[in-house]
Length: 456
Ligand code: HEM
Image (cartoon, rainbow, N blue to C red):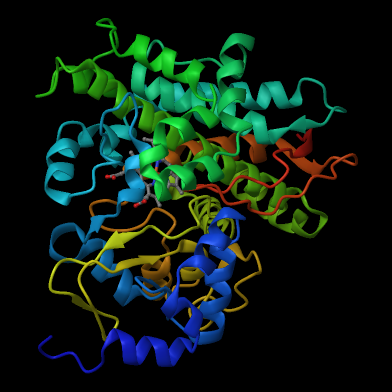
């Protein structure tokens, strides 16, 4: 490869010195099936630096250079690996599960405007989310002495927000309606990691493994399949845009797209909020709560993006407890590419993981395990921090829901911390460590008990 100073085999093997990963992928697979892939890769990066070979045909990177090359070069980076076919719904592709970048770009064009910042900030969209944020606080403060399980409550909020955006006025009301809450529960108490990896590694047995997943998403699937047929949704809903686009008559494809947004919008935004409220409720974080309350109560009518401390708290939450914290695998194009100064042959699987991107470079993120919102306010080093901030990935295949997610998070936190003080409930014993699923990381025990106390 012209210009390459090193080859994958000589440089990476030398750096990694992990001969076993150069010979077999068994070690990697064993880490995957036991929920340990992310942590294992992170340990390797801590030991060997920003490039590690994790299997004969797979390399993990942790630098801005590599992320930019893999996810954004040549008009949105490398194609996805077949892992993403697991995310098809109703046997139809959606933008998340489309592997090649050309058809992906074509499909995304049809509705991408529904997720732009200017669209999301329109009064009608904002007011729908504001109403749900108000509801969340009312429910949490109804019985002040009782603990609230915010693992489920933040997921309900996220589900109601995303279905509002997709199907307004036929969004779900899981915060208040028990039947809609059942949909939330089916989506929230599953561990689909092993069946998913089985389907990935043994695609010929896919039908059998699908059954192992059981009916976990059946209520949500029926809701989406029924909604996709509606012709009376609001003209500013995502569904309306899909129905008036090129694929208008292909209802299963429209349903697949909506189902993907629904699923993508719950565990991510819901769990980010859950981790954040949990962290802010620790005794050691009470000064952060006070500072946040001061900013919010001093600026009750400020534009949501003009609250620098709230912004810093959200960014630091997404840095520390990133819900999509694992590798996002891509396939090196034919002919190979130079990534981070290293020649990597075509067809090699390459990736970055947010968990490591947010921690490895301690010049950019000093004391990386500590939750310090102030680091985002310091003008010095802003470019470096923003480069390594990988919660929503980067490039044209990064998160389409980013603006919506940030608005949901900020609106909910503004509502909570303008009016309440939160604490860890005395009976809270659950483990809040991130537990990896295929592409999200809910808290290990799927419970988080918090008390809400109204303040003046
Ligand atoms: C804090 C909240 C969120 C985080 C951290 C997050 C993170 C991400 C990441 C890292 C990706 C890239 C995944 C990959 O390449 O494998 C992604 C893609 C995606 N996200 Fe999100 N997400 C969030 C919320 C949402 C919401 C609310 C929606 C609702 C629409 C959404 C919809 C999607 C979709 C459709 C994609 C695929 C985009 C494409 O392939 O072009 N996400 N998200």
